[in-house]
Image 1 (cartoon, rainbow, N blue to C red):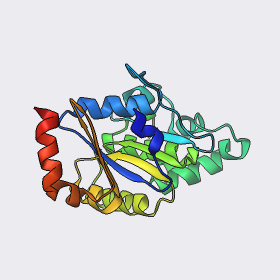
Image 2 (image 1 turned 45 degrees about the horizontal axis):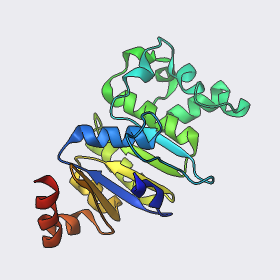
Image 3 (image 1 turned 135 degrees about the horizontal axis):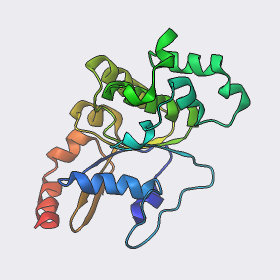
Image 4 (image 1 turned 180 degrees about the horizontal axis):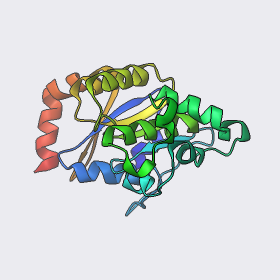
Amino acid sequence: MKYAKKLRKGDKVGVFSRNSKAISQFFEILSGKAKPDTGEVNWGITTTQAYLPLDNTDFFKEDINLVDWLRQYTESDEERHEEFMRGFLGKMLFSGDEALKKSSVLSGGEKMRCMFSRMMLQKANILLLDEPTNHLDLESITTLNNSLTNFKGSLLLSSHDHEMLETVCNRIIELTPKGIIDRQMTYDEYLADKKIKELQQQMYS
């Protein structure tokens, strides 16, 4: 976990592993949802984090409309106003009566759009994204890719979308049974590096 302390401003880190459960646990620890067996995670006092977990089931158990659902995630009186909530949901394509849909009956793609709305409200400068393209169509994935590319803060991202990792990330961290491989390079450069391939053989043996 010492690597989390070394996240530099503007770093966009692609996180991957041959063990997908290790990735999700890594994000749970970074977000404070789980505790590490050893070490600790310390975020800078000027940082705020927004976390998109792999499993968002627990966020959609209440049978409330989307305006009330999103209202839970802000304490600002101005933002809690229904007109503001509807405008915010409209950015995620929930316009008109769609903003009054029940949160408990949403499709996978609709839930992801709600989660992105929640993250936008948090105005975080560090994003933790565990498979953010799940349930998204190609147009939504392209929009997300562009948004993450233009994001001015730092992020840690896991994804099966090769193009997203390549175009967004400038640093790669691989979680292995024997530790972490951490390189300041693009995803394609990482995959093609012969020295890293040799190191991977050692780390997974």
